[in-house]
Every structure is written in C-alpha cells, then in structure tokens.
Image 1 (cartoon, helix red, strand yellow):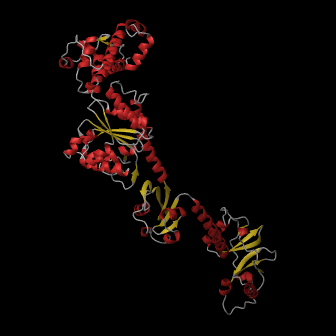
Image 2 (cartoon, rainbow, N blue to C red; image 1 turned 60 degrees about the vertical axis):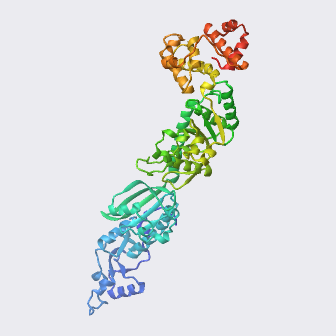
Image 3 (tube, rainbow, N blue to C red; image 1 turned 60 degrees about the horizontal axis):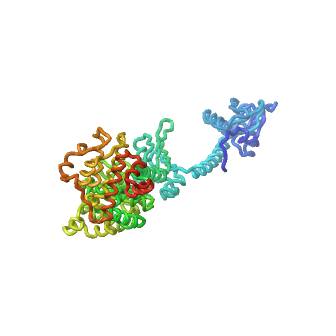
Length: 581
C-alpha cells in the first residue's frame, strides 16, 4: 500500500498461459482452438517452434463464407509481420509502443522463442492497480504534511484539500472536493490566480478564524501549454507574526529602559539632594508609599523635581515594568488617544503599518508618570478614569482588550482643586489620582539646601565640561543664596552650568553671575541673617564655615579641619551630613 514507485518489466505483467497453433494446421482447427481457449488471438508457430505470426477472429472473419476452412491453412490467413518485444523491456515502453502501432497484442520473445503475451487488458489492470496504490500513498503523504495544500481545476472546482486545510478552515474534504471553492471561501488568492493565471507568493491573509495569518503561495498549472488549474500551498505564520509583534514591543520597552537607565543613579532617593525639613518630609512620604500600588499625586512648582521624585518612587517600588514618563501638555489634542492606548495597523491615515504600542501598554506592569496632568482634555479625562477603573485598554482601531496594571503617578504645578470647582477637571478623576499627595517645596522655602545643590551642580558641570574644580566666592555665594529662584532647581542648575562654561578662573565671582540675578538680589552681603531656630542657624553657620575652610584649603580636608579646629573625623561626618562635596 505505502509503496515506492518502480519501473516494472514486461515479464512481470505478461500472460504466460498463451495458446499456439502450427502454421500448417487448417483454419478450422484454429477456430476450434480460439473457441476452446476463449481468446481472440492465438500464436502461430513453425515446425521449429518459432513464432511465425498471429491469427485472430478478425482474420478468420475476413474469409468468404463459402471458403472451405478445412482446406485453408493458418499460414495463408495469419498476419506474418508481427511486432514483438524482448524480455526485459519496461512496461511503460510497451504501452507506448502498442498505442503508437495501434495493436492489441504484443508477443514477448527471448532468443526468438515466444515466452508470453502482453495484451491491452494486462496493461490496463497493471496501471489501475499501480494508480490506486500511488493514490493511497500520495493521500497519506499529503495528509501528513504540516502545510496546507489545495488544488482547483480550470473551473475553480476543488480537486484536492488536505487535512491541514480541513482543520484550518473547519471544512471537510468530502464537503468541498468537487465543488467551487468560491462556495466556501470569498476572494481567495486561489481565485485571483485563476483569473490572472499569474503566480502570487508571500501574501499575508486573514481568515474567518480570528487572529489567524498564513503565508500563501499560489501558482497556475499548465500541461502541454494548456492551463489546467491552480495549486496553493499555505503556511501558518500566526505564531511567527505574534512573536514579531512581541519582539517589536520588547524593543520599544528596551529603548525606554535604556533611556531611563541613563537617568537613574546608583541610589534611589539619594539623588534627591537636600536636608531641609520640608524636603525630608516629602522624601519620607515617598519612601513610605513606594512599595504600595496606590496612585500618587505630586504637586510642585515648575523645576522643583517632580519627575526625579516619581523615578525614585518607581525604582523603590520593585515593579517589573518600565517607567514611562509623558508630558500631557506636549501631546496634540488629536493624538492623545493613540499615544495613550496605541493603535492597530491601518487605524488611520499615516499610521505605522505594524501598529504601535501606547504609553499604558508599554508600562503594562510598571509606572506611568503623567506630568502636567491639568492639561489633559476633558474627553481624555473620562477615558483615563475608565482605564484606571477597568485596568484594561483597547488600541485605536482594535477589537481586543489588553489587561494592564500600571502604577499612576501624576503631577502638576496648577491648583487642581480650583480647576475641579471651575469644572475644568473631573472631580472623580481628581480623587482617583490623589490617593496620596506629595508636596515638593519650592527652592525659596528651603534655602538651607541651596548650598548643597550649588556645590553638587558645580562639581557635576565641571566634570561634564572638562573644567578644573571651581569654587564660589563668598560674595557670589550670598547672591545666589538670597536669589528668589522662580525656576527652582532647574533654574539653579542651568545657572551653575552657565557660570562654569563662561568662567575663565578657578573661582566664580560676582561678575560671573548672570546680571538678571544680581539685579534682582538687593542684599547687603556684609550682613548675615540667621533664623531664630538655633538648630537651623547652627547648621547654616556650619555649612558656611566648612565651605569657606575648604575653599581656603583648596579642598584639602586635613587643612580644612585644622582651620576649623575640629578633628578630621568630625569634618568627614559634617561633610556627609550636609552633603558638601
């Protein structure tokens, strides 16, 4: 049954039970032998037992009815020019010879002696059995192929439909074979090739089953120059396609992570500089809620470090997903939904052909930082509220829902309570976001931290710009300390960078400070005001004197300790306490 195609020889098929008659016998005897053997043709042989011809019913029928068959010899009626073959000839060659010469019998000889007879029915039976065997073999082979195979004739009638196609389309072979493919499937690639008679390959196609994709190759079949049908093969690429999209999403996440790694320090909250009570209070709350999943609302003026706080909270939270920051004020109104939730391929004109992951999908199990949340349009506020409640999103142009579980940290420098009263911000969303509120004080309310920030930024900017270590003069320090930093830490850092880049000395003096700061700072640098709180006044004085001693000693801590008249270990402790570098 499960056979290997082979070329059979004539002796494997021929009939060895054939009848012979001596050529000198009468036709009457020949008729008797034909009737007795129930054969249409018998072989005539000579006295040396060598084949000399063949006589058939047709030959006898051609005699006149009045002829005396008893007196007429076989050799006078038989066909003497007989086409024969030798043993060892391939059966397919014998078939072709019989068709060419239009003969129904083919003697098989060996050394001139007849060994058998090959008739048309022998070839027919042999080919039928071989065809049936090959058909069963082909059926099993095609059935086991892990690829779809479909064949249709020139009229679009299905002639082959393997088990892969049965399972893929939920259509049985016995139902579709013998019927037009268009009765079961619409606008198939197979039909397009039928019409155009040109092969189509490497085409993605979506089928009746949801989220199923295949790579189809369809080619026209020509036999003897005549179009006879189409053969289609189909490979399931659903898993490969999904893996491709997952890889793309992973690459997007990786890019975010790479960008975020540049902004993260070795410590978590150590990056947030300052020792003032207000900043320490803000850090304490942030540390306390970092491990929870509660939504956090950060309020602070522009430049106070709201994103720095949110990054520290995310890193401390231990969440597996990425930290994805988004500035709500920087997104055009018409792009909010696609940026937040992503979109599918072809969702709108100009969309990426492969679709795109949204902010919430990228931060699936991580943290979304919504900066400038007050600038979120009202229609998006409603959709954001639904996302926070349902913990699922749907891409623009998509039908599938995607489960998410990100931590939401929102921030603004505007009065959201006032906006709620004015109905410019949804009250239900405000309370959903403001589960825990962290207020970051402006720099003017934490003057004792200005010295720490100044020296930290000064060291950072000198390294970044390849400058030698610079120090601040007493006069320059007092001006910067008493300036009302409207831009807060961001403005302070930019000012330090400006002074470092433009400085042509090892000491930053008053003249190196931007003029707008000097003009807005009207202070007698000879007078020093200290807070009434003795602890704060002591800390301020210690920071001032330690900084001055380090300036005089050019950073030599041993000399600075002698100038201050304190042990070196005490100086190291104070330097770490106040964050002085």
